[in-house]
Image (tube, rainbow over all chains, first blue to last red; front, side, top):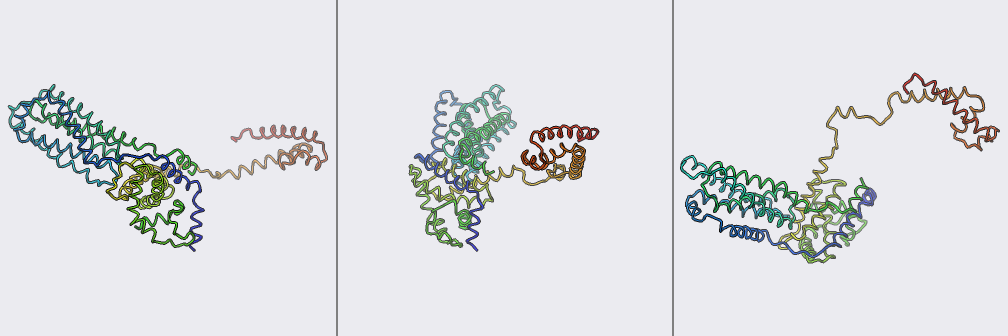
Length: 247
Length: 227
């Protein structure tokens, strides 16, 4: 009873399929090279944060420190700055976690609380624009400057992050890249705080939001593709031809 | 546990020598080796992956072979069937190869492998989902051209045969014989000449004259029809 069944199964399957997986195993074993184990996501987040800090220190001579001290005295502004910093750290950690197979998908939610803090505190700043009209409002060219700053700083930070993420194996490249984009945009916003010549307003928040969404979206689209290309050729030529022959 | 067993029973041919203790011809698979893969295998797989990270090709080859049935079972549990299963196994092996630096020996191996397998299985299911399998459009199905014979085909063929037979019957005796034997019964010139007692040269001449006459009579008879 069982004997013929085993026999039947082995005869029913085309013989060309069996060696293809074996060939693949042989090919992979033959092409094996020693690899350096990747540092843990926490370490890699620290490395990236170090790079962000370096960029901040390089930009420090251009900053407006006395104005910064005055602005940080306002509670919602320093909450917004803190929110941006925490969002950057949490999003970077989530991106690194999501780039390692087998880590919990729940890590992706980590940046949400600091994101709420950041956007909420910035939104409060907008309200003050209406409550205290005497506040120093942004001029259009200043806002353009903010936008250029945000994009200009986000870009190298995103590139660095994508390069670091490519070394891992993001199974969901778009999610990983979008988290990386959020990290880069939040870091750029945190770096912008010392350079901001004015208090937050609705238009200001809008500019920031547009910049952040743009960075996250671009990362999700382009970075996802970059990270996916890291996945390399889908199959070896030998198995592809065998599969075509079977079809 | 259960899924591992399904995979091992389903594709024993993929892992020759994987379970040397298993009797080859006994129909009922022994559950014991399966349990050893699921429990003690976790540690040995992890150790093999660690060895592979420092470049031990033999350990890596053994690891990949051990992984094939496990991947197969995991993919099957995800709903992958048939030929797509092999695709998923191979895609997963390739991804495993590229991702080998991300494996952390402090953590168990199978969840790492499962994450890769499930992602590749989802990819395969999406690919298959994009391919049309069923007819959801009754109108398109009805309008599809049928490869089989049309209703009038048989009648038409019979009419053609009748008109050909009629045209042949009207040929002179020598030409009719040549056409019947050489063209219709597909005899050779030698056979035809022994049958009819005519020379091969005469048969050739009669054959070609017959064909010419038939062409003339059939094409004139065809005029006015749409064939």
